Length: 433
Image (cartoon, rainbow, N blue to C red; front, side, top):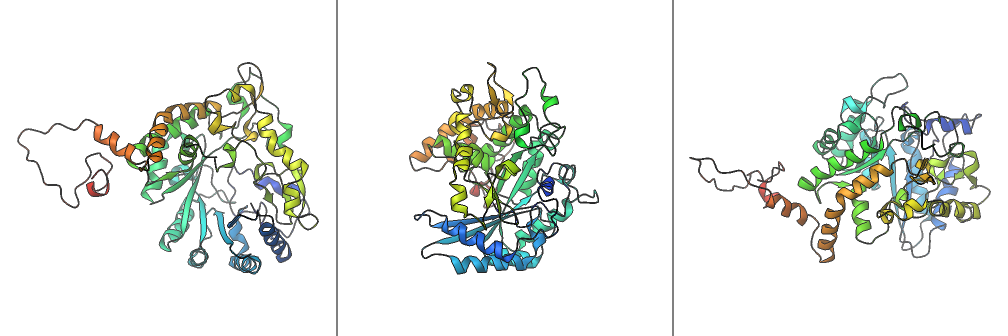
């Protein structure tokens, strides 16, 4: 994950964990990645891939990467093409708050097949609680304007939603907002901030005492475990009734992949960490995007290659520690095969038997995975027989009790625009029909 402008952003979101990374570079004045560093990064990223890897991916994040301007990314694409190897394909993705997007940006994204993630937390009254600009002004209208431009130009994009104490109370409003906008790919990221940990390094935090209450452990903005679990369950139930194979929610996809016997693609659910490194604007390489701290700095790519740093002893230990430090309570959990203890940054509770390292969101994931398990098993059965997972949705809707026919009414012919009887709001021919 490249941070070509470091933590510099045009917004001042109150929950942003990356704005404070400016303190790592107290003398920093020029935050934009130089062409020398850009070239070194692209070349080394390509060279570091295994021989059989056909697709080489570059992910650009910030701060707000669009602050660098279009010419920076035009240069990046040009350099990628200069260094690409035969039979290899390069893909790019970029995460943005959307407020600086223009027609020119969207034309560039479309022409170069960028996948764009746009950060939005739901409708305006929820989004604008924490996502403000430098002058404490709301940002939803500008973000929505950027989203419309992406849609207008046919850019491939998805929504990244930070689930916090506020919007977690209104799950269906959040979900339906994105559906109304025509967004079919959604990521839900739980906000977990240790209380008093602003500016504190990750390793300065210790597992919480079993006598501490959750309200003492995290900030008021942070989502509560049960809130997050209930949030996911409410959205899953609506998705199951109406949107299977139409809307793709990242954690639902991850769960289904795990029940099908696959490996999670999302790093927080993988057994080991260590392969999702973060590159700062000056070439400094860190163990992880959420561990950009002095003690997790692996080196600088101008002195040591990405391949060497990624495979260094320290980084390998960082990766395997995720499994080796997992409490026995988690290893014996029925859902360990999908959760794997989630992200180490959230492991600051004690287990019921007093082991350290329990994830703050354990209650949320246990509740959610328990709720979806029967459905996931049914979907797995469908897929194993070469049938679409959406069959589950249609079967369940067909089994729902129908409204009794009122006396004196006639049976109407099903026309081309007749709404579906399952209540999805879609045309019958495009739904259960």
